[in-house]
Image (cartoon, rainbow, N blue to C red; front, side, top):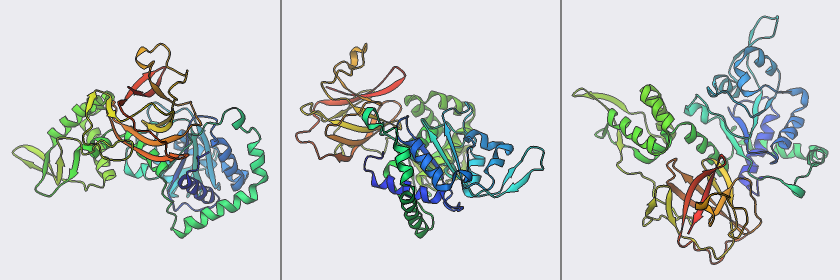
Length: 424
């Protein structure tokens, strides 16, 4: 399910134990995210059995804003919901944060007087895709534990009796969960670190608040003598935003600059940069203690994790990498928060009807291969300029004679999905 990722397995173990308690001290919301046939439903069902079905409610995420729906949470240890549809207005997180923290909430039952209640239930959601949210705050994102499910079980791998088999082992699974709870309590309810989970949360933050990658690349903490003109900063962001294809957010912030400044403040908090003091000089407003860089801070990193200062931009959306098609390989990558697989060189699985991609290997979400694999991050700006490419893990041994010469990455869309190609 997690392909040997011991860090993620450790967090899942702690989550399972935590869900069995009436504790809310971790202040976390758990999201199991990934396309179907990946084990999310089985894991959720197991956790429900650990808690006891009578201790579980099933209120949808969007319904938590309704007092009558919140009444179902009373005296429950766990609230579980599978989420596939969300409001176009975005997620309202006020009640979600309150429930996760065990804060007092208002609940109502029909034909009865409403009352205040301190919930003890944990929130566990299964999703195929993450929702848009109106809340861009650090306080919301720090509560999230997004557990990515990237393994898709097909054919003989899909065990239709898996749940029944696991339920027979429920006592042993309970002991497994209690070991995670013991570890969690020893650390005062601070969950273990897991790279895959951290990446999933960071990707979600960047998708929901485009100011975060802008600040990460172009803003630094300075001294009190350093200052940034507010109008210049806003204009730089608008230019950058449109270059990255974030035209909707650019238009929205252009209509109401308060949206930008709220998002900018949250982005500074995410980056660990102190909120600057605003001062006026000669009729202009300045933010003191900040530096606005002319060029992005992040250097290009090749797939071996080494800085590639000599890399040159060949065209919009393409970055020279070093490749060789002498060996068939599989690569697991992140592409805008999505995972995909690299088709082998001589595969028949091409993008039909797309002449530009006929001679390319293509990253496609639903493909899986059993060949030797490399796993690396492919974080890209929406303008299709790639950066931060690095090996995360060699799977099944490091491939021999794999030097990636004369290849470059290219992002394209086809059939409603995004693909990444390796081009000669």
